[in-house]
Length: 84
Image 1 (cartoon, rainbow, N blue to C red):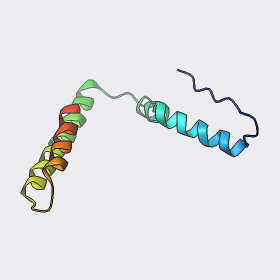
Image 2: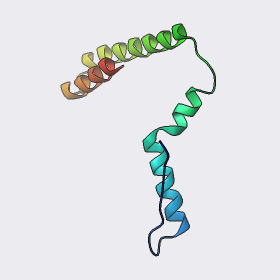
Image 3: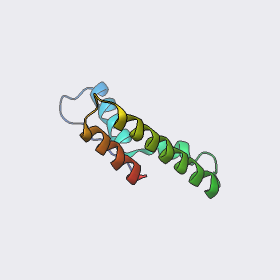
Image 4: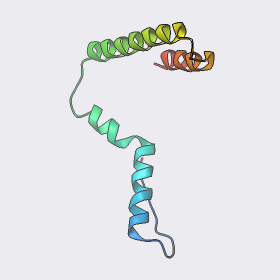
């Protein structure tokens, strides 16, 4: 999907560049290009995903043991685990 930025009246070039950068980052174009730069085997992708999930799970366990961490923070972390 192309990123289009149209200039409005009295808008400087720096403002245009700022809005362009924001739209590109929102569309996640740079990260997708970096990920597609080199081919990854499906087994590598799966291994990275499982390691990410294990790391988040261990972090959630350690946060649950802490006294100064709210339950809401642990719940948010668990949501991130299930999103992956």
